[in-house]
Image (cartoon, rainbow, N blue to C red; front, side, top):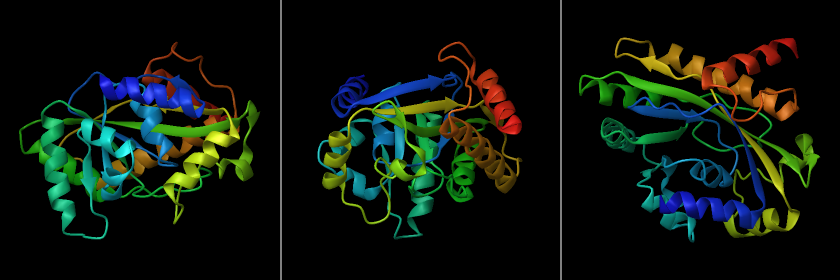
Length: 248
């Protein structure tokens, strides 16, 4: 619980206001597949509930944030070594089998926040097979993050870059810039969880999760009507959002 309290304090310090649509599934094992915009994503999601993350190895060395990533028992990935995927998948599968809710930023990198990049199927499939080795199905839940407003004004494509952290941006200067810019609103949308069996096609599953996250994020970024926070189940929220996407 300590990381949750700390992340909530960090959100207050930085000026992050979170709107949550739907809710996390109670089913276990649970893998949450999300888009990735900024280092803020971990703080935003970590403030909602006890979660562990699949994070790049550099996160472990971040000031303060790295400490709490370790306290959350994050699984660290060395992106420079392809051979590390098998070890990461094995560790991820073991953690899922223990009942931990794990967050995977399935694009494999962060971006400008104006789009959702293609999801990488390798870790999704590997984690599924690792849990299946224990004789269990796994639940996978899509989640969309959208940074929508800066000081109460819609960001739009241009100003979303002030929050997004990607490429070769340095952590400390970006952190200070976010603090100086003032209050940031972010919408977190939980989609309906999928029960996944060992025989399910990995690439089709990945495309389905990617499409769901992309559509939910697009609706949230566009500021279209969303279900009232806390009043919808995850599947109802996703259905309402996908309907808005089609109508938009």
